[in-house]
Length: 279
Image (cartoon, rainbow, N blue to C red; front, side, top):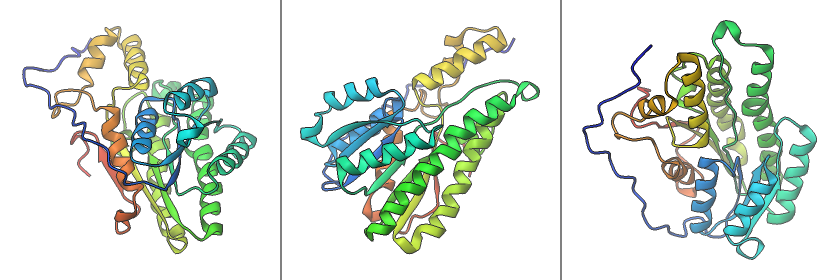
């Protein structure tokens, strides 16, 4: 059994939490996976930066509570149910977003799912689920919102959330790795095709972010290696930072790419992984 430990004698680098400025004042954004760690942090940040936001998630009760906590309708915060495996749900969610916001200036595709198994035990069901959410459903939502941006003539920004797993690849996560690699490639193609409509498309590739999803991964690795999930979670912390990446650090990168000042940054995948990925 491997030893899931790293030297933590170095003092961890503190998470920077700077004041928010109204860089997105007057803008309207849609955030998928808003009930999750990164989606929640991003929603909170965008609202603090002056935007109106639709919180979209399959867990409607959770995003209803979050929307209320963030000020609700009066603050321009709305909750919408979204099941990326269901085309009808995607269409209904886009209609609800437009009803709430009138116009959509930006989309952050944060929602995703990971399921683990050794490569030789990877079933078609695992492929279908992870590609269904991470690739196909995400693309269908993006296509509908991009069409709205193009038809409106106002352009916009789209930011996809991939993973360093889509560049590096990890054992026991074959379909997840492949799905996130697909997100990276889709980003590059959409950036080219949507440029004439003044729609900027970019991507972020987070590393080990301190979210419930990462805890689930640590639990699964613990089962497979007959090891303590808490030891594995500690091992998964970023070596250079001396800690896990905070959700707000990914949120800051997404917010940056949703802005108007990055028009020359197009089709990129920005690593937010504490220096792990070399390209």
